[in-house]
Length: 241
Image 1: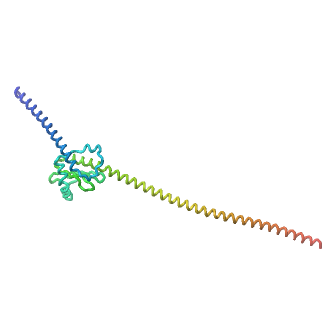
Image 2 (image 1 turned 120 degrees about the vertical axis):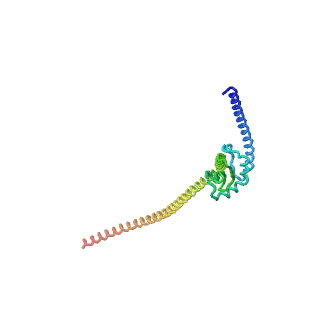
Image 3 (image 1 turned 60 degrees about the horizontal axis):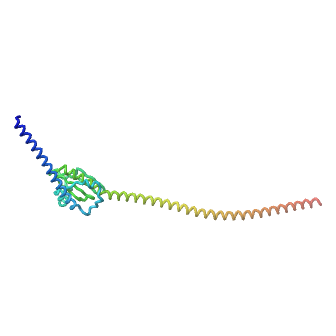
């Protein structure tokens, strides 16, 4: 290669590199502008009735939809997917559930189209339609993160409800045991009253019997004295004769 050819080769290489840098810079600037506009549209198209909790660290990772995607989400994709969902054209690739919220990635092989859906209690809330598989995966992961965030309060409520029900069962069991113990105590008190009454009656009967015994013994001693007296009299009378 002669000197002129080398110079031309170096100049062409420099122009290619410089042009690539300018293209990357322009693409980055355009992307930043698109993301800002998309963020504004997403804020405008997010349903006000959605039970969104306080923002967390996951919210800062939410991707920005393009203007076209934001427009899709706000208009006809929900109805379109609802019509297609009962057919055989859609394949369910991925689904994530968190509480009553869910995210699904669906694929229509006929036209190579992906549908990314965010739903609550099986009702579609937002649907994004794209033929870019990488973009579909990215939006699906973002929707899955949103379901986790949205379901936090719902899951906490379910846990608290279960804990309350468990505590109520323990209270009921404790109250039932307390009622049984109280019934046993009442029976014990009644039985103690009966026993005390019986003991008083028995003591009275024993005292009466003791008195009767003393009287009987006194009668016995009197009878024995009479017998001895009669015996002496009888013996004395026999000796006189």
